[in-house]
Length: 333
Length: 275
Image (cartoon, rainbow over all chains, first blue to last red; front, side, top):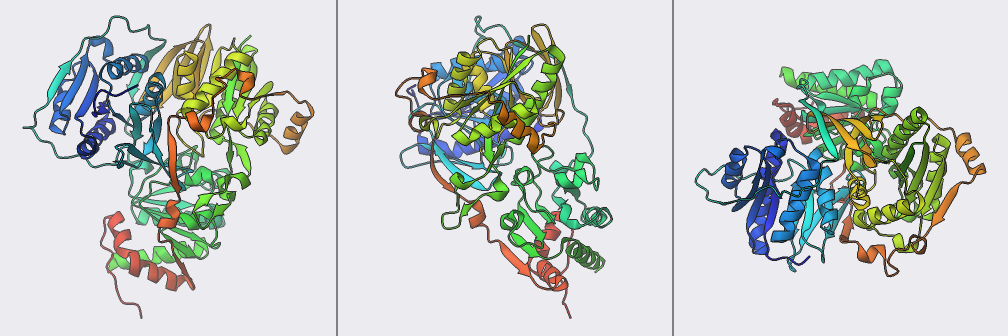
């Protein structure tokens, strides 16, 4: 598909707080890229009674908002939304489409890309425009052990998904002006083959390990169930949460709800302190968003030690005890 | 009879990966392979459905010839037969081309399927894109991150958690699901079990020509996305190594990074002099 313009489109994902935030963050990044492509910043919104989002997107930098507002779109619907995006893109042919890497976005973007016969890069940690005007899509793989820079040189639009928190939204500007282009719902959308029977908002469960800024992870290298209790003590002392590896769950030192890994929780703390963990991919895949990693292990060559900002070569249990002691001392000062 | 397909991928075991320390890249040709963990959950879900509804399971995998091992492991778990798609011209396929080749193979070898099950993502490229793109390519509905499945005639009832919502969905068949690795914990297969599976070879091996793909198709060239550079972020981290007596290391840790640790805790960890 040839493009008609150099516009950058952002899919308006608004169903919950983080979905809404990632949309605003993508509008901000689109605003930084648009001068390099020479196109407009556009938001696309589907749903019913969605005027507040249209205004919010304009206040956050959207110059044009394409809107399909209809009762039939009240609930997020993967099939209807895919069909709508396909038609809109074929009609307007933008250069770039950005979609938040929410659960919905991760299901949606691959389908849209496939329908449009174009490329898609997942979970980008950076986006830029190169000297040829192509979007450089920077994406992690192997649990963050490798970073790849990807281009979609020949197909359009260039599509990428981006996780919440990757870019910073710009501040709300109530005076910003934008063009709103409302479109009717097409009358030939195919029948829904996936039907929503029931949807309920999951109860907020206290603070989750996904949201805390301190996570203390312990592995089998802690030595025993008794010694492992120090991991909980340190987490408590630092007002953090405990994460563990699969072998620790198997050994019964901690419950399965504390498992950090591909089959468990994904974490993104400001600080991760990791004790006695060798660093199997099933675990490290879930920690690549940690800002700063301190790893403690007797084996300086363990994968976890290589991934760390600070690798402490020591017995995990002894180091844990010493850190507890040191923090207690410093808090009392 | 319920006709099930599971798509699996053999991935490198990253903890044993040979790294090229000069370039910071992975020497994948030297890596040991395993079945991608999430694919095993999909296979487990298929086996349980098959047991309830008198089904049969065909497992598809695309990869180098050694990926045949993954198919035998799947058969040791309970799949009935395997199809390996392997060809130099398939190498370097992105998710667009991978889903195209898988769809072509499914239409050729197993056109009367009821349900395709995939893992929710792979541990190597982690895109989570092949499942939904395969559904599109096959022209069937697809739902990702499914936790539980319940089948009645021609509709599948699905439960999943998505963006803080619990959703119950109904999907027409044939369809595709990707399985979230929570509920369907894969059964254990002994090494002996895998060896036994090798005694009853039941794997079809197909190349690009067998699939009647466009004869000019070369995955690396025709993939819409191109990887222009790969690097290791680990090489960009400072990776400070502290060693010696535990007490001294911990002191040094707080001297150098106390602000950072305190900042994350929301507490002022005052530095003090060590005797």
